[in-house]
Amino acid sequence: MKKTLIAILAAALLLTALTPASFAEEGKKVLNWFIEGEVTTMDSSKVYDTLSGEAVAYFTDTLYRLDSEANAVPNLAVDLPQISEDGTVVTVTIRDDAKYADGTPVTAGDIEYAVKRAADPAVGSQATSLPAIKNLDAVRAGEAPLDELGVKALSDTVIEFTLDGADPYIAKKLADTIVAPISRAFAEEKGDQYGLSADTLLASGAYSLTNWTGADISWTYVKNPYYWDAENVYFDVINIQVVKDVATGTNLYESGKLDGTFLTSDYVPLYAGTDDLLGVPTLRMTNLEMGISSNEFLQNENIRKALLFGLNREELCTNVLNGTAVPGVGVIPDGIATNPETGASVAEDFGGQVYFDPEAAQAYFAKGLEELGVDSITLRLVTSDTDESIKIGQYLQSAYETNLPGLKIDLANVPSSVRFEEMMSYDFDLALGGWTGDYDPTSYVNQHRSDYAHNHSQWQSDELTALIDKLNTEDGTDFATRWAHLGEANKYLLDNAVVIPLEQATKEFLVNPALKGYVTKQLGYGVFDLTRAYFEE
Image (tube, rainbow, N blue to C red; front, top):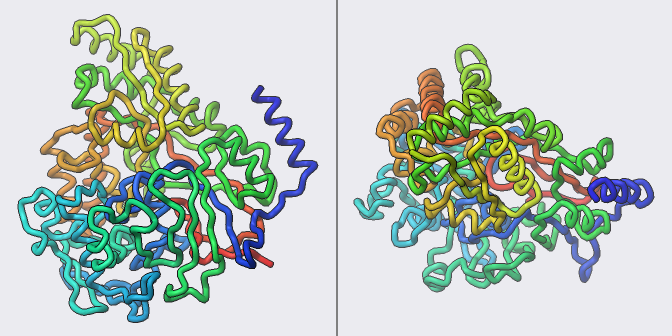
């Protein structure tokens, strides 16, 4: 069946010219685009997953944007941040001509409101992308009032952030949608309905959200005529379609109904050498996460180490993912940073701790079973119901049941939102997860800090937390010390098998060759920034 499908698609490629998906919609310029799953929220204060962040980015105006080389460039801000000598006070001036989609002005006070809203325990945000603002942890824990949070509008156009310590990546972190303005007047008018539908959201960015009621698989963005750079926004309408499986996406693309879609590794060879194929290296880690707090078997270190060493990542990347990924070298992705003194990569300095050793894995497993007093164990593995996730899940099931006799893996393929809910409930066995941090490598180890919301395993370690606290505060711009502490944190997580790194992928897409002006990103919410994209005519 698979070979037949590939042959049909290959024939279609040879016989049919791709038709641009843009079409006249009452004379408007239209882009038909995709997203790989349903969103969990459109509330920028509550975004904690990549799909929701991708969707929200269309209608929010961030202080900075990341260019094609991952440099922060002014956007809503007029210039790069002004930073105090000790690095803890960051001042940003915003445009005085920025407006929401209803024509009302955007102010620095709206940014202060957005940040405080994301930190307010009464709002219940699970978002984790705020910088290390002074008193953030205490405010979130309800131990300090919102007024003590280190953010303050000094005027209508000047916002000041006070940090726990110097942050060398602060400009890039301020490119996150969680720091984008929210109209306080509008949000308070909508009350607890804010963000639940398109009608209860007010855009500050290039587009406004329409036709979204909270659980849709398609919606629309329309150009915001009040956007400060509207004259450089080409598309009047961007139609979004949820596409979970590659066959649907490629069919829609080839029939001219989409201008872009994702590919899985099976389909990449079909489009090799065409102008439509686009590969984007990413810094997103795909990991096997463990519900350590909720599963007694996984509280056994030997069982966890059996899972760490019982997997052939080369086989996964080569045979299952067709070379569109490379084995994970650890918790931190290779390529995000280098040793500031030697130039060595993450793989060179931190590698060698993640490898396939079936004999060692079986020994760990046997010892773990003995300690637990059982002959076998069954673990449930939850993945998203997308093609790639299902394939990886099936491989993990087969590999573990083969390499670790006595282990049974039950697969559960569910919508992404359901998987997120299970992981955030901290009540699961195994979950196929991913982590897209920010440009500070610390974000990849910070996930496992004791009190971090996305510490899905609920691993508790004063040692690791203290190390991460140093990275977030004391280390500042001392990159040599930061590098040493990153290595220690990575080693701790692998020595204790807190998480199982799997692979680091290159994302593959089909993109209409006429589409130009978009920016691709290695990190952050979504691979594509389409704000100033256009069709070459």
